[in-house]
Amino acid sequence: MFKRDVPPEVSSAGVSKWYSSLDDQNKVRSGRYLKDCDTSSKERFFMSLTDLALKDENYKFAAAVGDTYDMKMIRYDRFMMNELLIDAYIGSERYDEAKRLCNANLELFPEIEKEFREKNNGIPQKMNCRNRLIDVLVGVEVNYDQAFIELERFFKMGLLDKEGFDFRTQSLKVHRLQRTFDGVYTFRKKEE
Image (cartoon, rainbow, N blue to C red):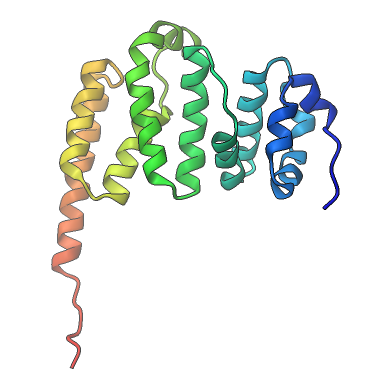
């Protein structure tokens, strides 16, 4: 295989070593996004690269970015990068990794809460560590009991207001009941 030159965006962001560690396929994939990446810092580069891949529904490449870069970030940037990677891992059907990052962000949240609320004008509707944890617990693991425990945790942390908590709790109850009814009324012919 031929050696590719390091693109100027990669050099500008100071991530040439990371880029050189990529296999040829991921170098080609990254090329689709480099011209639109924020190269003002390593952190901004990785976050923008991941975000661009997610917008393109290129989940496996976005997850590969998460798997291959190794750098320390300030807490708020780490939280935001994890929020992106949660979607990447969900889209790649890597649910254990997504769940791990959800829990990591929930542990990190009290430390960055003030900054997060200021930058988002409160708690946004889309918060991956909260929403996607429930998605994995219910949709993948079918663990409603743990989902109810997590909703209670979110309410106590201030990630859900009373109205949101009540709505989501009721929705889960209905979903579990519907799933139970679906199981009762599913007829499977006995094999002879």
